[in-house]
Image 1 (cartoon, each protein chain N blue to C red):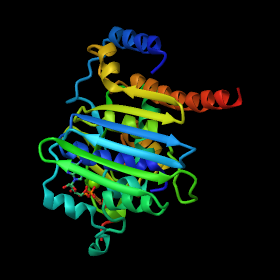
Image 2: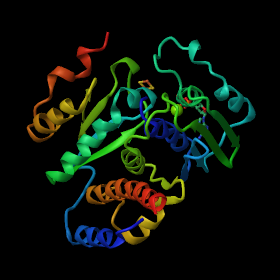
Image 3: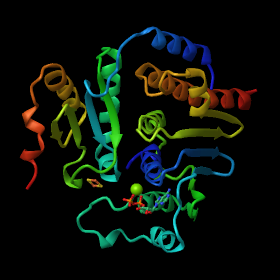
Length: 188
Length: 121
Ligand SMILES: Nc1ncnc2c1ncn2[C@@H]1O[C@H](COP(=O)(O)OP(=O)(O)O)[C@@H](O)[C@H]1O
Ligand code: FES
Ligand SMILES: [Mg+2]
């Protein structure tokens, strides 16, 4: 997976499988600290201690039928390849939270890629989950919250294709504008 | 989130449309979105379907991501459901997605080059 947003999509599929109703995705880029932090939390059924200890293990060599390994270990590997740190916490019936801190300037840190596609694919899932996405770039923050969108939509489904297109544009433009605002601030 | 006024316009337009979107009658496209599907390119395939359907205003077709529906080595996998009919496509990329829409969904002819029987060993 050559985009961080593809990893995020895969990790969030786990949350949907765990019957989450809300997934929170927090990205924090702090250039001075050279960190690119991705935090994904859900309110799904969580994992017991045994499963938790197993998913943290890099056990992708045990599989021969699959060339791509398991989702969590792939994400962990991508993070650690940049000299970053990866952690996962989970509580049964409460939820799961994954935090990956990448080194921002590392050559092996994949670009974010099309996060708007990731978020809309998740929203089109029949599980009907909600997503809160908060992206901070130094001092600027953009957020997207499907609950606010649904409130405006009333009885129009969020999966309406024109709504999906609006969401994609909103995210794309929102992320561009925090980059631009940050540049303006620095040059001032 | 900015430009929420635009969203309100989209909502109002959607409410004015009196399309009866009955899932039973329509065609459903399922895109396998598990780890290997994602790695093999399932997300841009799904995106291609969504954009084509929206831009060409194709009615009664829904696209839904689903979990694992196949075999890792022949992902991305796409299934087309019409009533009791199920067609499974594999190794789908954006070009094949375009063909599935034009030839199968709109034209009524299965895209033989990518049906699963050809790839399963
Ligand atoms: N958010 C989550 N909530 C509950 N269980 C999870 C979550 N994420 C992962 N798991 C558990 O960890 C396992 C491994 O996840 P993953 O590495 O993505 O591989 P896979 O999804 O193919 O099983 C899952 O099968 C599931 O049991
Ligand atoms: S997880 Fe590999 S084909 Fe489904
Ligand atoms: Mg998984």
